[in-house]
Length: 407
Image (tube, rainbow, N blue to C red; front, side):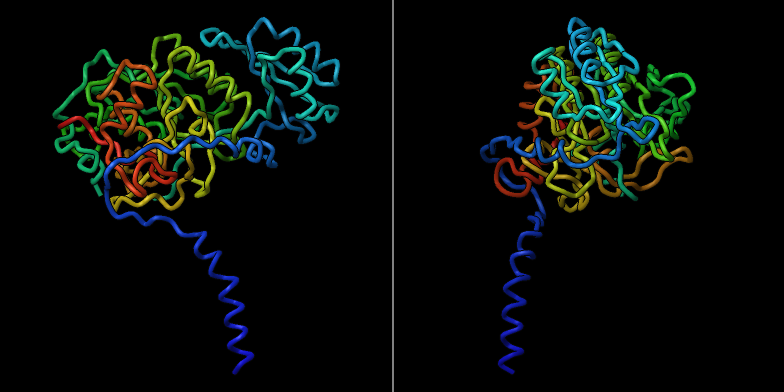
């Protein structure tokens, strides 16, 4: 018996710390607001140096690399990297961002860390990284969302038609009944021959923002707004993905059309080239709202993890964080995103994911501050939020559940 008792004590001593570390807050409802916690960007190096296979591949299964920087530094970049053994594959300009993308094959002659050191000397405003893919932040599948965010009569309160919401996603089916009365500009930045994914994801996100369904289940939370949708995702290896080249082109296109409020319901790795794109966009006044991603980890996925992007997590009808949602000190706001009724080609179905929480925040931002700076948008969203979890800003819910200004 002594031996058995001793074994139980040892086993409990090993198991208990692990169990405690795996717990979440289990928050059941809103609380009062408190003070902010500081942003922690310490995960940068660990995340971006982790092995990544979700990226462009070249013959021989080599990774493709991307450099983002001012056009005036392009020659210096090309000369420095080709002298080190790299091969330039193509270029792409983003004129509104005043940036150029240079795409390289390092031909197994150059390591990323070495390329970074070279550019730090030769072109210090240019940034190199793996040409990564970004995936829709959707999960696997009640109309509770509007009431939960304070919209008791969807469709009744409309915002001015002069407000345009930008959407970077897959293609949008403008023939869907809930979009037929919405003014939509629909563009693509895909290259000729590239196959876009199905319209389900992009259409669902568009309708969550601006759908018109007579107050029905597919009524958006920013009714009356116009949409400018950019298709930047294609099918790659049987999956939908958007790479930095096309996401940058989509951001550039929206800003060139003076569309500043942009929804991005996708997530992927931290990346210096993507950071350079997001920094340039923020410098041009873009207000970018993005899904936190669905890895279920303490992880600042991009674009949501970038400081100039508003990161949104998903919660269910019981005010609990979606079990697959990423969390961390970068999270700013929460919105419904679990078992939402969203549009499909055949009408609608239930789905979960931070993908669906982000457009709710984007729609409410359009109602609260349609043409304001990102800091003003943040302040107004925060003022309208109801605290969840630990008092004040926390790593699971940010400042809490965003609420609408009436209606």
